Length: 253
Image (cartoon, rainbow, N blue to C red):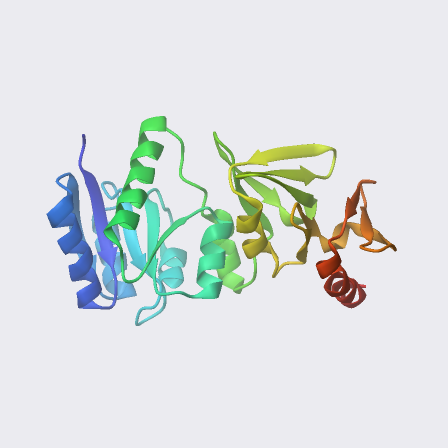
């Protein structure tokens, strides 16, 4: 198999050394083009190897600007980016929204192997990596994303949040219902989308349903209650979520 050319960017020598050690010990087809400790060093190194780099392992917090700042300064990104980071809620949310990859520090070799395998599968299939245009535009303003990266079995679809009406659980999969009577079968479970979307006006009204609050047109009273959505669908609300939903609706309106 052809070698994979990588660059490592991190402001800590020990983090660079950890990755280099893992690659040297467990991988015989990884070619490390170089490493950088700052944004400026990284820019110079990426420019030097812009035609050969396959994967950029990028720390988020660095001197002279964070990893996002680095990406904003690169005119053309034709390589895969794998972020390496300690837990940061905003950063992970941004990365997930854009279908990009990340590794949590301290880096685990099994997780690293999984990321490398994803890259190989992408290369074999000929599919293009997720576009970083929306990602970079959102980072310019430090705002939440307007589109959600939806994984299906064959592709990644970028769906405007305001087009999503609700998401229904289907065991390990989810069905995403959109305006215009469209739907997408997603290969992520409803818990994944709940974690990602509750901060952007979505609420899980029932174990089976995650609803866009802005799409609710009526709350129908009853023991549990139910909601009518703007596509005419009526969904049951679980008893334990009823009061919190009513509070959210009162704030939304």
